[in-house]
Amino acid sequence: MRATQRRPSGRAATSAAVGALVIALLAAAPAAADERHRVEPGDTVWSLAQRYGSSVSAIVRANGLDGRATIVVGRSLTIPTGTGAASSQAQSSATRVATHVVVAGDTVWSLAHRHGIGVDAIIAANDLGSRALIRVGQTLVLPGVAASSTAPEATASPGPSSASSTARTVTVAPGDTLSAIAARNSTTVAALARANGLTNVNLIRIGQRLTLPDTTGTPTGLVGDTFLGRTYPTEVVASANRHKAALLARDVPSRAAMQRLVVATANAYGVDPALAQAVAYQESGFNMRAVSPADAVGVMQVIPASGEWASTMAGRRLDLLDPEDNVLAGVLILRSHTRSFADRAKVIGAYYQGAAAVRKHGLYPGTVDYVRSVTALMTRFG
Image 1 (cartoon, rainbow, N blue to C red):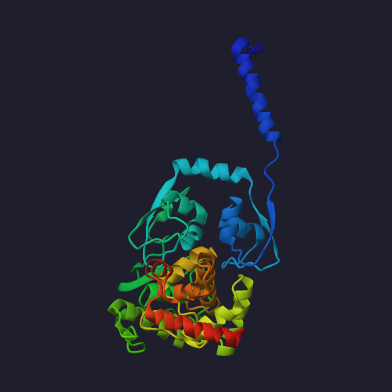
Image 2 (image 1 turned 90 degrees about the vertical axis):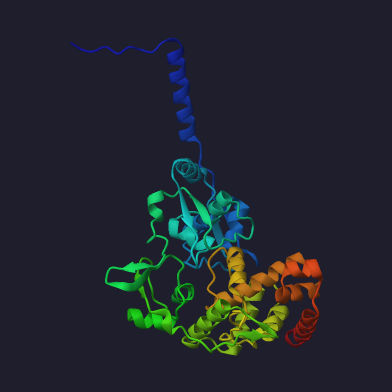
């Protein structure tokens, strides 16, 4: 006996027909076309993601960019703006929301890449603002991430090793460098290399487990504790000593090479190269190994907190011990001050004193001397 099908009638038939039509129209609708953008001075992957409503990770994938998300002026980039993936991610985010407690060394960039989500998504979910600053101990929402994926090992937090009750290990996360791992774990690149038998400190891989050496031998005495009449806290000086030891243990470019890097970076990001050179010379004499008691690092003498701010502008984690990243951090900070102040003296003063203090108090007497010196140097490099 053959079964007979009953045809829907009345309202049911109408609803079925409408539903079928909607599905057909959605299937036939073209996906939003990707945008094309030619890189201009000052562009970063971060700024392009914000401008086009895309994400850093999507732009990196679409253009085969390296882990540092480096882009070059004049290059044509594909900017993914399709709505399919975005809507899928939004739907997933509604049911899968995880949290992460910020540990030393975390940045919005490193968390985004570690968990495969966009920097902009973390900023929006946590209302971080344009500077995307986070603090140790802060709890962040990670939109679209399953709670199980935020286990301690995934966050690269140090934990006990199964091999020893006293040894600690850390898992290399995307964007990590040996110097960054050393800095946030109170050790040095050389000590990490020895503890793990590394012959090339520049070659570590994502997911690799590194043994953290005993920190009782953390270097001291490489950097003093007083600068311009101010004595800095013990923890700041200790960090400065670690950074100095790390820089002494690695090869760095010559002063002439660093000067050329300053000029090239300033030109690429729309900053007056004479200004960038004058600041670099005033700060360090183009010496990449320079570290102050305030834990100002490298040619551009950038402190870690300012490095975090510069990282948000770069759209990726900047390693202040890396020559290129150090210069980029300083140039991006100068660019920000240039956009904030019409008066060049205030631009220079903000680099030395801080933009907020310049707005509130004007230039301190010591800052006036600094501005005078940098301005004179600009004629030398102009």
